[in-house]
Amino acid sequence: DADVIINLPKMKVHLAGTVTLSLKNWNGLVPNVHPSGQQQGAHRIDLGQKFADLYRAVKADLTIIDGIIGMEGQGPHAGTPVEMNLIIAGSDMVATDAVTSYVMGFDPMEIPAVRCAGTEGLGEIDLNNIEVVGESADSVRKIFKRPNDNPVGMYKGFTVYVQQTCPGCYVNVRGALDSFANSGISMSEFLKNYGEVVVVAGGVPDFDPEFAKDKHLFVCGDCWEHFPSAESVRKATEMAKDVTYYPGCAPVYIFSQLNTDLQKLAER
Image: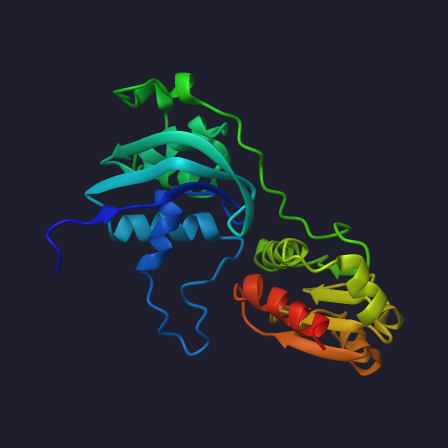
């Protein structure tokens, strides 16, 4: 019922979607009315298309991106601040995100949401066709450290199997492990006192159930049950020290919940 809609995102990178600017901020339009609570959080491989579709349905009258302090690296929870001292505003969300992503050191076509919305004609993605007033994009451009969304082999003793799944699970697992690593708890002391961790998501044809024996097993998502390797995962649940399930597609809540559960283990 508002006369004007204003979109106010921050300038930051994101494990899911590369950056989170005005188009990704539009995820907040979706009410969590599904019983699973995952309607808003659903971050699957089609995430960029989801945001393009949301923009097709509802457009902001004005977008104002807060770039005073940006975020690079492992955003949105484990990134590092970047002083930019910028405000970037526009009436075309696609154009505004295209310019901002360029200012952050990206090609706009690298950003799934911007690419989908731009190629579908929902806004202008070509920097040559976008009028920029004030400081030029090149004069304020910095190369932001890119997010690495792959959780495999990142932390010793925290073994992740995500061989056949969409980015939804592995992005959220990586975010959770990064957050735990930054929680102040010594990961080496955790392993010494509480043992190793195994995380499984999707189809895992190379997974040997014996590897989970006497370890903390975390099983993510819904699709693992529909792969031929499901029986191996079930056997692993019988051999593990304990098992935690995170249902959903994708279970975006594990970004915080897996981190929380690991911290609870450390407090035992």
